[in-house]
Image (cartoon, rainbow, N blue to C red):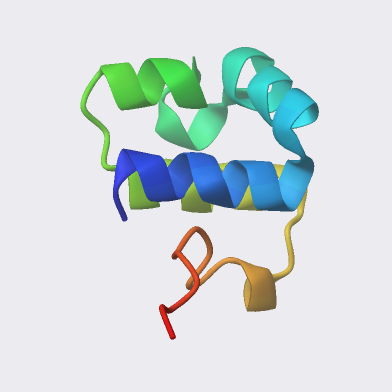
Length: 74
């Protein structure tokens, strides 16, 4: 997962405005008590941050994998 895919997944799951709040303010204990934004800046892979965010927010497993991928071109 790339950072752009992470952002797309966050926006799709939480909405653009709330997604910014969640990544900026929600402290993720599984990532050493950092927010998603802090973890990404610190070099934690986006997939790892996405899964930690999903776990903390109770996103169903079915919506965690493949999230953020662009729609295929036709």
